[in-house]
Image (cartoon, rainbow, N blue to C red; front, side, top):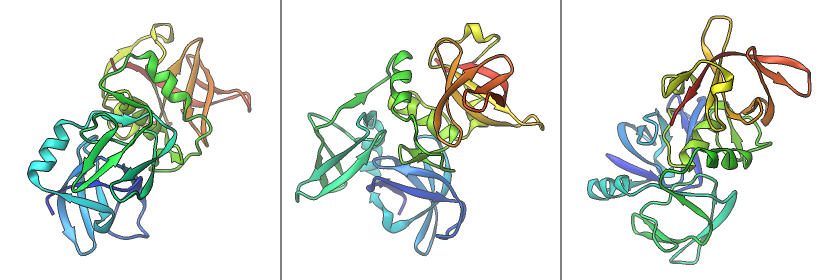
Length: 256
């Protein structure tokens, strides 16, 4: 296998080729990848969307020909805008899809993967959306539990949350917080921020370890235990439940 696509709702990307290995990220339905290494039941992949690399079970993905891979990669800019919904294949089999799933070559409520054609009657987003739409999408994740490596409404980490909000709206972010902090333009003051901009936070060693999406009126939506809304000031994030600062502000970035 040289090229592939995820045909399940989402699957784990692991650090090593083992079910017991740490989940470092997830690949969602409809996302494509290139195969780097094959090792028995496992393959090490290079994900096209965010260039992340890791190991997935071969039986949880579908092989693509080079021609299909190139065609899908060039026409894979539509995402599901439904919290959770079902798709139906030509055999009337149902499969659940969650927010942010990619719908390859979507047209008129239908799309195909390999030899399977699916019907999708939910809301979709295609192409690049305005920055204010990021906030609308972000609110859909409120109360999603924290999950290391997660990228869905069933569990998400801080950078997985920001990445998915941007992905759904047609804008690309890297996978990890420190990688995302390398993107966009620096904003000098909180007052310069617009809803939808990103804020990044560091630890005592100066390493960026957290990120969130700026809201209006000095609020921020981020994943800390769950996706939640807190206050944002020049010091960092102020938790509205515990009445204390939890994260130290490092930099704010305007991605677009």
